[in-house]
Amino acid sequence: LSSDNFEGRAPGTPGGIAASQYIADEMNSIGLVPMGSDGSYFQSVELTAQTLLPNSQMNINFDRESVFDGNDKKNSVYWTKRLNENIDIKSSELVFVGFGINAPEYNWNDYSEIEVKGKTVLILINDPGFATQDETLFKGNAMTYYGRWTYKYEEAARQGAAAAIIIHKTAPASYGWQVVSGSWSGEQYDLVRPDKGVSRTALEGWMTYGKAEELLLKAGLKLKDLEANATENNFKALSIPRLTLSASLKQNIKTTVSRNVAGGVIGSKYPEDFVLYMAHWDHLGMNLEIEGPDKIYNGAVDNATGTAAIIEIAEAFKTGMQPERSALFLAVTAEESGLLGSAYYAEEPLVPLKNTIAGINIDAMLPLGRTKDMKVIGYGASELEDLLESTLDRRNMYIVPDDKPEAGYYYRSDHISLAKKGVPMLYADPGNEHEDYGLIFGEDFSDDYTKNRYHKPADEYNDTWDLSGIKQTSEILYELGYNLANSTMWPNWYEGTEFRSLRTKMMNSEE
Image (cartoon, rainbow, N blue to C red; front, side):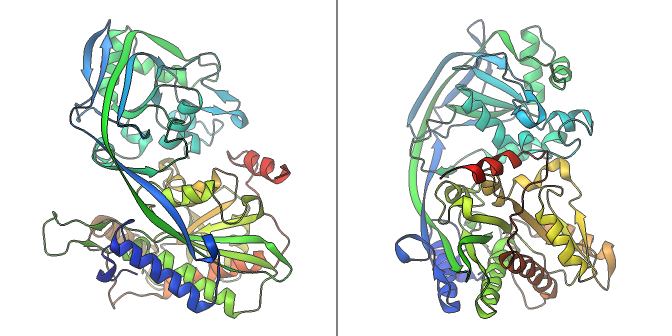
């Protein structure tokens, strides 16, 4: 999968087409049932590539006089998800909405006493739990989905805002401004949505903390005071006097088509119910402008490992005793472009979500060798963790929660697309405590990958890889899913988690 022949597996490229065909051929050779469209292994995913033209403008005005140019890349980035070549916003009133959260299970609604239709909302990143380090607020230091930037834009759109701007701060975001400006500059990918993006705000963006502080001072407001107020449950959003936003966006829009790949093993007793395994097959393609002779981002760890694992697990399902319930093996596209393949699947599932028992996502396994532990990203989410724990107990292994829960890594891979619909999802990786060389060895191995190979052409397979740990993790996840497929269990989210009510609603629906 990480061969140069696939040219980095970018969606919509010859290499990406060849890689998805290779996966389908592997599924066919195993004997998986085609689960895609029209009796094939493929589900087409139409994507857009949108680029703002240099003559686009975004200004914040004080008494109609511009006091901030949004094209100042040191302090601002902005874009649109709407598929219009020209978008205009005129004199949209600015409103500070705190963390921009509407969370019934936490009895929290920052929008409860204000109407923001047609207005521009300024939003703090993360959630009140992180801001206060109060374990009784949300999940304390651990980020909830309400703290993730994707949620902020989604909720602002649901509330009818014209524009949504997140105020950046390194600690609660878990990354610096360079990550923001780099990620949201240039060409941006999205799904071709039936409504052409009208359900999104007309403008989305980020602003540096310092610039937001400066603008609010012009209106007689101190951002630090507003931040403190926003952590209180009785916080009330407020209009910002005399500040408005105007924008004229002009963009180039291209479309391309990529493919999810899906195959199944049908159960003997409850064929309509499925355990889901998923992994993203795509990577970053080629970049002919980078220095050095190697221009191909092979993505061997990220995520040829996960894709290979679900193929191997599928073969184990197929060659072993037929499970009582079915299993779906889903290789999704465009994860690196914003989890788009999984987002499309969540909207157009090949198996009804109500019949999806639970899911396991595999994303980037390091060739570290066998470990004594497994890492659960987003630990404390669902009853799948109980099943994993019992599976590990039989092997004298243990679970380690991810060590940076405040960074919200659980919300950064494909499983979140289904979690947002209510399907319980497990995201687990090999741990760091090597069976022979210990914890420090594993941590150094992981740090070296992150520093020197992650999202670089150096993420390549070579014959020195120790695949025993990847095999170990794949066997554990196979065992967990196979046992689930031979039970009558329907795992749920833990009480108090942000997705439990969605699962309950789904299971009680008539559809």
